Picture 1 (cartoon, helix red, strand yellow):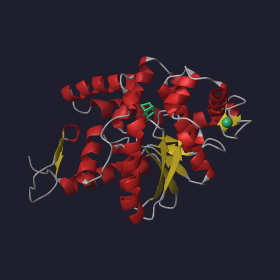
Picture 2 (tube, helix red, strand yellow; picture 1 turned 90 degrees about the vertical axis):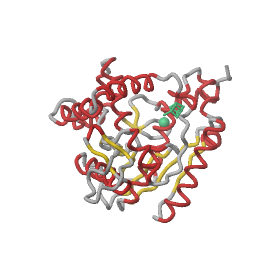
Picture 3 (cartoon, protein in one colour; picture 1 turned 30 degrees about the horizontal axis):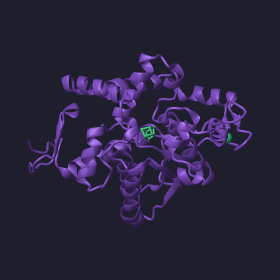
Amino acid sequence: MNCTKCPTSIKAVISLPRHNAAFCKACFTTFVHEQVARAIKSQKMFSKDDRILVAVSGGKDSLALWHILLQLGYRADALYVDLGIGEYSARSHEKVQRFAETVGATHGATLLVHVVEQEEGAGIRELSNMLHRPTCSTCGTMKRYQFNRAAVERDYDVMATGHNLDDEAARLLGNVLHWQEEYLEKQGPTLPASLEGFAKKVKPLYRLSERELAAYSVVNKIDYIVEECPMAKGSKTLLYKEVLNRLETESPGTKQRFYWGFLEKQSRGEAAPALMEEKDQRTLHPCQTCGQPTSAEICSYCKMMAKAKTATPR
Ligand code: Q46
Ligand code: ZN
């Protein structure tokens, strides 16, 4: 198949059934950049003057996001949280470091690193054992806390994550299946900094699929960690992604219609982020221990770490 955009019919490297298109390397890269630029503009994410903190994991999505933002001329630094999950963390840390030293450094971008074993005294799996909590829930609390804290303390205007269309569609499916309305409200690609101590959070890759981001990384020679985190095995999210992929194969564009349709509904006023902002301001106040916003007296990260200090491993 040839590129559907080039007049000189160069061979295509990827076909995109949901867009009825096929692209050569150069046109595909342009397509990806355009999709991200559209996301940034339409969802009022940030401007060229803003300082952005990208949450990177070493996987294709977050490194592609950092790459794209730097290519588009944004001021984007990154934060990597080393969870201390054996070989997986060692290798992903290495990939992030190398990317920062090559691509990041040529754009004057900085990499910040938070090592959980050093800062919290034990790796994420050991902490979860002590707390008798599933690893991914401890990890979620840890990452949300550390990314928000770094963004706020270092004066970044906005924090960006590499969530793609597949991630958001799978999450939406999970939230709808369980009617988790509270979570549905927070599912937009832009979450405002509703009050002091909360960083604005954005997802500039929500218009691009996992497959498109893998292709972008290959085409642009981004060296990322291919394996998923070993703790992800058997997760509900993977099941929802599989189901959505089956639907997508039968009917291209399903994921896009599902998630983008939800966003359209949201922008028409149902569960609008503006309402969320008011609600946050009513219910949140500074944690008595660390000062970050929480609805309780002590935030969930501080509670978790206090418990970890007194707990004994299972
Ligand atoms: S990194 Fe953390 Fe994921 Fe690994 S421990 Fe679970 S939540 S699976 S995105
Ligand atoms: Zn706290």
